[in-house]
Image 1 (tube, helix red, strand yellow):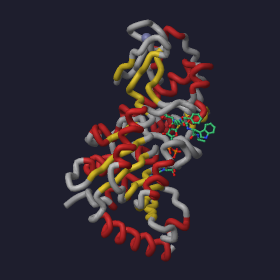
Image 2 (cartoon, protein in one colour):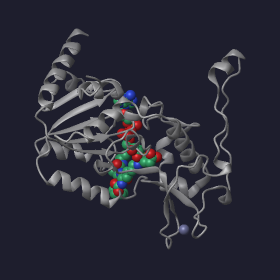
Image 3 (spheres, rainbow, N blue to C red):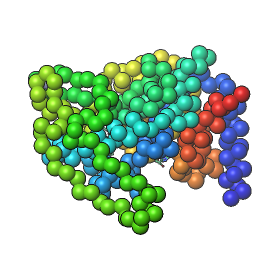
Image 4 (cartoon, protein in one colour):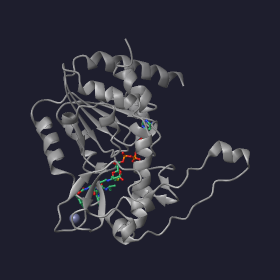
Length: 294
Ligand code: BJW
Ligand code: ZN
């Protein structure tokens, strides 16, 4: 539609004009930023793993009931993330984190480690939902936690051979649903200190977020005006991450949304102090931050 196209160009020009003078910037990142690196998002038709709902698996209850199932889910996520490469969107944020003329902070809900691998400055990167590559002991009396990039984590957690779409199409084979195997305690990651079952170092529903990260973010928000929040590839459904958008608005900051799916009013430029850039964030973000070339 011509109208939308025109409005998008207008928003882009206005955003880039404004961006020059915006000195304190926050980015709030969600699964959509890693989508074009091949990592699935949580909500919507894609948010499935072997017919299980990804949201249901990211809970303490699921782990309590069937740690083997939940570990297979996370082993698969680790495997996919390790195979994936950071995209131009990750790199654009990484570049912004090195821009000495601004104060910048990224709050990421993603646990895939791709922003760090893109070279984002660690001190300005807050992984508020933890990391796929951190493991911690589930014993109440043991404090062991470790960084771990091994793939597979244990022999039993090795990924089955992936379905070779092209080869199998040639032979007329159909993809088959593999029932998830039952795993016993000894086949899962165990604590090297006390032998208890370990768990992924991520934040599940009902769990509290890492206090150090929340404090670091609060410090930034309280130590001066915030000019802009970039809201990238997130459905904004999860508390407390979603609260940062309103907080920045209340501090007088503007909002720029990068998503494949944006409300019509935002696209039409009818929401005050809000820009919307519809499309793959790996394309729109580097374009709007103008960091993709000379
Ligand atoms: C693209 C794109 C492309 C696609 N380019 N864009 C009522 C009952 C019980 C609890 C609560 C309640 N009300 C509130 C709560 C608290 C709860 C909560 O928020 N629940 C709501 C869902 C209702 N929050 C918590 O429990 C948090 N803890 C907490 O609050 O503690 C205190 C407390 C305890 C108990 C009660 C109340 C308070 C913890 C939240 C932890 C969330 N954890 C997960 C799993 C992490 C580990 C893992 O990765 O496995 O975090 S859930 C999952 O959602 C994951 C994500 O980080 C998070 C956000 O998802 P995200 O990133 O937004 O992804 P999607 O899929 O939702 O959206 C993708 C977006 O990208 C879409 O918009 C697409 O359009 C877009 N997109 N492709 C650009 N190429
Ligand atoms: Zn232990």
